[in-house]
Length: 293
Image (cartoon, rainbow, N blue to C red; front, side):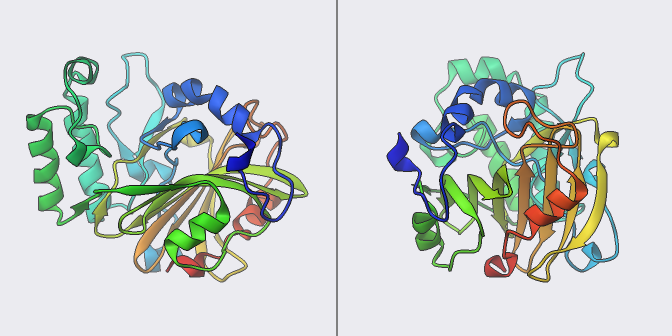
């Protein structure tokens, strides 16, 4: 398993992949939907991110609550909030995902998933029969969005940048693994070492494509949110919660969402030390987002 984690800029934390794999089930149930990692690098993820809008991002703080969508897996006892992780409020990408989550919430997903085999044409979506395929196609067409058709896995930063045809844009990167879609959208899990170990999930979603990505963020009122200009000059929204943090950015042709697996109270699964405002801003400075515009 070790050969899948290239030591790019430093030593890979020995327990990183092991802890990611061992906590897959608990993360899937508790927080994140639709972020699939390949093979033994499988990590329960899909980024918990909502993105704030381009020009308005510099002056307005939309906040995570503005990206609330239905949770198809909610129970009567559920009190937490689920957000869409692609798009800004009122963008085609967000509106399509919200419609799709509403539709999924009306289905008995457990039953249809057990009784049907997902078509290869819709392998990246919660589609289990012809009716669901038609509903997805209708929503995508209404908002003029394309559906993903393929993805390629990678297990190092070098592979990742080669697939994207871009220069390295993550500083202090120690481990990286994930997949890239046919349009350049991607979802990765990584570990950076800079004073402390930062473990995170990073998503880039091309505008004009539909990615079924949502996340349960718990109590949205527990997040402190602000606009921060990163070292590369890009404005991002930072949301800091008790056990996780979120970085959101709206770039020229894509949305970026980064979920830091630690918060103000620490995170027993990934980052036990509390995250401060200075820590979160330092983390945001590790990414040269201009490489993704």
